[in-house]
Every structure is written in structure tokens, then in C-alpha cells.
Length: 429
Image (cartoon, rainbow, N blue to C red; front, side):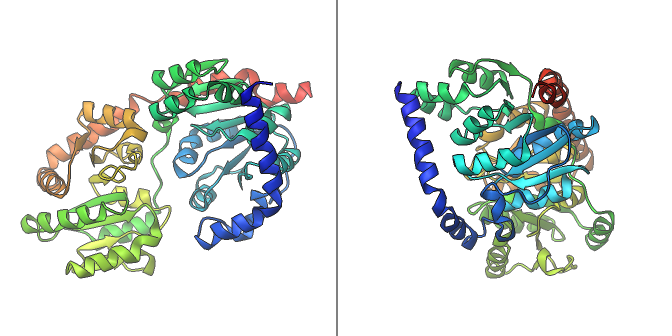
């Protein structure tokens, strides 16, 4: 037996042995707000709802970004009459999918990576086809899914240079993992090359599903109320910020206000529970702030509006013609700018964009986004843009055009998976 199967077998044995202690692990995560206590059974492979009759496709994304990118494909599958099970691993993604999944699609939490939980999960759901998004290479889930008889594919697959170099130091392990996968549908030529070099048996470059994601929705009544509350004032938006970026946003606001005293800054922390911390920062800076979660709308005195809620990104992007995208001034890889671009919003971003490098490259190249290095840059660009409506609209239009030019992955993926679709798989069982 080669070293790789020994390592993977040891991992499976350890995971099986640890299964009786899973509740303690989930308790620990729950205390940190990372687990849904009422749906704990799903993490142990116990289904929360009945399986619908007929063929079913299982689609899995780790968290919010992956799940959002999968929505166009889920919509396509449901439109064709296929039952779809969507799984993810975070509370935030579950909350969002409850609002965004099309009728008839089911959300469950993904089981922990134990043979015990994976087998229990698969025995109930019996998927004919499993599509794992991006870089979800859980050894036991992969092995048990393949063993169940389901076709297994990686969709919207990505492989960073860092991960590629790491896996090259364990070639037999990654090859054993990829032997479970029938097809890898990569986001780019670079991702396709890396998966192929690591031993994936079949690889296609289908493009990035994120470019097919529809704009985030907004409640019309809420949008009307917010629009009325900021009417006549210049607005800009800092989306999905992380600790270390909030300080830049507050400093930029002070500088902008020197030229535009009526400016209102909307800031949406990536993790809404940080809203109170940002409020305290604003207070210490002498800024009047309002917290969205407490039900307040901006008043004429509000300088900083803290959007500490989930599922309202579309609302705030529609209010602001220019947005800074977070995780780009701190080294967190950069959140996706595509939702903002889809709504024709001019985009500002820092240098740390490795997680969405292709998106930012297209936007920068097309003139829909600008690179900023800190508070001074943000203040200068926001002040210039909101003071020049023609330039602002042109930049937003270029942002929209840049992402539209890169769309089409859903169609290419649908064509690639057609031979594996459930009707054929079910008939073979």
C-alpha cells in the first residue's frame, strides 16, 4: 500500500473514532456563534427534512461566496425540473440561502467530515450527481460520495498558487483525492492547469460562475424608506469590511466631510456582530452614527450608518453609486466585487485581491474600479467621483460591462454535466 492511501485511511479512522465527540466540538463552535443549535443534527448527517421523490442533485458550497456563485446553476437545474439539495457549512450562508434559493431547492448544513456522518447523509439523500464548489476537498465526503455511486464533480473549481505548491509536496495524497472526482470544471486556465498537474483525470475551463450571479435583491419598501432618509445627500458605501479597515473608512469620512459636509458613509462589516464595535469607534471619533439592527434610519445628523444586518447588500449598493470592497486593505484576499459591478456601482479596492484576482483585473483594466492604498486615496477618489456625476456614471457602466463580458459559465457547466444528469444516473441504478 502506498503512503497516500495509508495517510488517508488513518485520517478516516481518526475521524470515525472522533465521531462520538462531535457534539462537544459543535458545542464549542455554537458558543462562538458558528453553529445553528436547532439544526445540529444536520451536521451529524441527520436530515432535517424529507427527501423529495425522484432524481436529486447535491450542490455544496463552503460559505456565502461559494453558495452565491452557485445560485445561477441551481436556478438552471430547478428550471429543468431537477430536485436540488444545497449544503453549506456556515450560519450566515444558511440564513442567506433561506432567502435566495429558488422554490423547490432545499438547504441543509453539510455533515462533518466523518465516514459515519457522510454515510448517514448519503443514505438519506441518495444524490445521483454531486457538485462541490471551488476547493472543497474533504477526504471522507469525497470518498463516501464516490462510493455511494453518485457522479462527483468539482464546479467553479479554483486552486491558488499557494495550495498548488503545498499539494505538490504530497502528490500521492492529492492524486488519491482527485481520483474520486469524475470531472473538474475550473474557473480559469490557471486553475485548470493546476488541477491537471496534480492528477485530476478530466479538467475543463468553464469560467467563473460568479460572473453569472444576478444582482442582489432589495426590498422595495425598505429601499424607498432609505432613499427618502438620505435624499439630497452624497452617499458612499464600504462593503464587507474587516478589522483594520474600519479605521481607514472613518478616517476617509472625516477627510471627505471637509469638502462635502453632508456626506453620509454606510459601512457594512463582514461580520454583523461587529456593528457595536464600529459604533464605539465612531463615538470616540466624535461622529454621529446610527445602527441598522436597532431599526433606525439615517437622520440629517447621521454621519456614519452602520449596516449590521444580513441579506441587505442589494439595498445599500442601490443607494450608493460608489463602493469600497472590503478585505482588500487588510490581507484577507479580497471579497468579490461582482455584486456591486452588476448594479453599475463604481468600485474602489485595496491591493489584497488574490481570492478574486480575475474579477479585479477585469474591472481595473476596463476602468470600472480603482486601486486605493488607504484613507487618503479613498477620500480623494470618493470626493472626486461624487462631485462628477458624468464620470461616476461612466465608471459604473464600465464596471457592469466588465463583468458581463466574462459571463456564460452556467451555460458551459450545464453542457458539461449533461451526460451525468440524474435521469441517466437513476436509470442505471
